[in-house]
Amino acid sequence: MTGTVIAQAIPIAISPILTRLYSPEEFGLFALYMGLAAILSVIVTGRYEQAIMLPADDDDAANLVVLSLTITVIISLLTLLLIFFTSDKIASALEKPEIEAWLLLLPVTIFLTGIYQTLNYWNNRKKQYKTLAKNRIYQSTTMSIAHIGGGFISGSGIFLIFGDLIGKFTSASFLALNTFKKDSSSFIDIRKDKQISLAKRYKKFPIFDTGAALANVSSYQIQNILFPIFYGLSSAGFYFLVLRVLQAPLSLISTSLTDVYKQKLTDPKTTENDLKRYYKKMFVFLFSIGLPPLVLFMFIGEELFSFIFGSEWQVAGEYAIILAPMFYIRFIASPLSYFLYLKEKQEINVLGNFTFLICSLASVIFFKSAEDVVIFISVTFSLTYIAYIIYSFKLSKSNL
Image 1 (cartoon, one colour):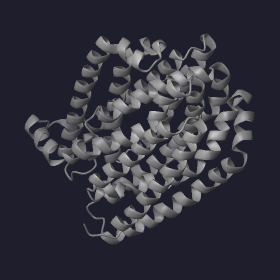
Image 2 (cartoon, rainbow, N blue to C red):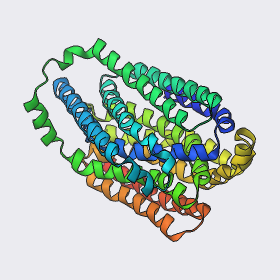
Image 3 (cartoon, one colour):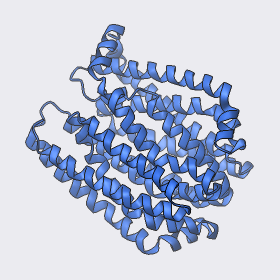
């Protein structure tokens, strides 16, 4: 968690610089690109990286790593072919012809993301928490340096993408080298027949979890894709800045906590009583550390954004006030929802995440102003996350 806090502090610290080097419109185009990349990244591994923590045998986990990486290569190549022949049509459908040249970088982005996601789970399984912490700091630092450098060069949004790619390349390379150095012996018994057997054993992940994760990511990223079309690039840029300042750090802090608890929850020695105790500890801790930021943004969010990021970003502060309660509840719900994976209740996760997606689409269909969309999302998402918290609590007490 400490490594994650440091890693997130860096891009947040430089955000006041970036908002003066890049316009809201450039951030809006970057948000559109990252929305597409985030959605594609859900399917790039077939979700088999989620299963790496589960086998008792390291040989099985290593085969899952190779399976996940193989799927990553295949999906990335297919994406490259698709974009190569249809980039102009995609840009036209998005009503943003200026993004056409950027689309060719999407396969690289999702390829590096797939490698990172897979090796992140492996290193978590091996309890390499210091390695994971360093990795996040390296990624954040290199990305931030590239973003500032690109801003001084031209202020074009393409440098925001290059910075993101540099950070992802650094992260994926660091984890690959660490895995090869410390765990190469675990990858001696790599066999296709074992990978096929494991693919069948954990078939719920691609069948159920892919849909759930795709719906979940789409429900958040759909605004980054649709805002530029319906409300202009500036609105997309404002919304993206809020995500950068609020969602990103809270999500990664909760992810780091989840990484630690995943190892405890999946330990063969963990009893049902332990599960109840871990749930309560996680809930109390998340509730406590998330409350101060919520109170801060509810009272001075608009003024804070205008002062830190510049007066032209005041609208982003208004969005932050509206979305702060939802982010707080999500911060609590996200780690606790791992009980759905632990109890293999992925189908429930599919239902919940499609609820998010339906709410996101409904917000754009039924509301004409960006502010009304943000209000609707905050309310409906908050209620859904509360349902997650309640259901996860029930699972922590069950013997299923």
